Image 1 (cartoon, helix red, strand yellow):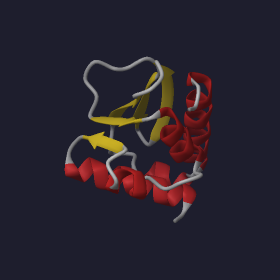
Image 2 (tube, helix red, strand yellow):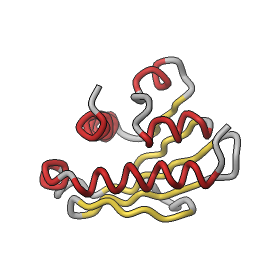
Image 3 (cartoon, rainbow, N blue to C red):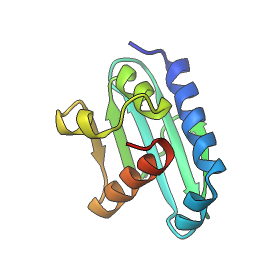
Image 4 (tube, helix red, strand yellow):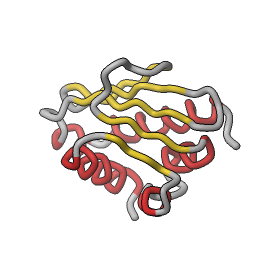
Length: 117
């Protein structure tokens, strides 16, 4: 089990890696979204906001997210640190992502560009 602090650190790593990637920032400059990340086994909620191609992170959950990412703390930390891809946990049901299909595809592509396969 990961702690709230470990999830926070992993999201900071993800955010930093995203914001250092100029290609991603250009690609997403017109895709403004609010993403809530929720752990199921520890009290941990975060909101990532993508606006004008830049991601910001804050603690707590937004009331009206475009996407919601839900999983156990260990899976969330592993995904956002880049230790695992979201594909396997998504396929086996331990990772749930709620949002439009277009947003899900975009989010998957972003993680692929940051971490690779």
